Length: 85
Image 1: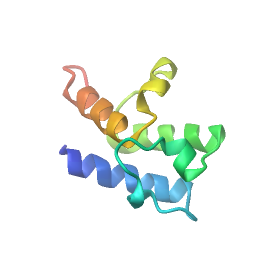
Image 2: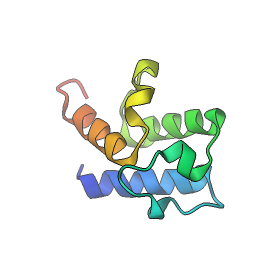
Image 3: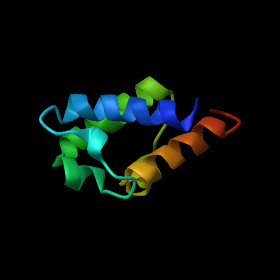
Image 4: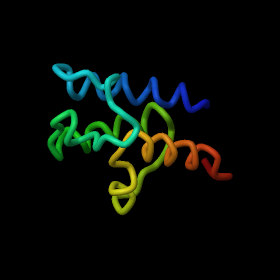
């Protein structure tokens, strides 16, 4: 899966979570939750949907590592390249 494909999936899922916002306008280092005004419940829903769509597991202790678009995409790419992914 390419970086572009991951980004497109992330944007699509964020649009479902925050339909009144424009996730496509996120800059790489914007804090996703702050910029899109996503509460903790919706943030968790997003992570679950992301795991289902991209077949990655995100342990709770890694949630802080995926706060920006850049970090999230990098994290997913790393997870997808792990031998057991």
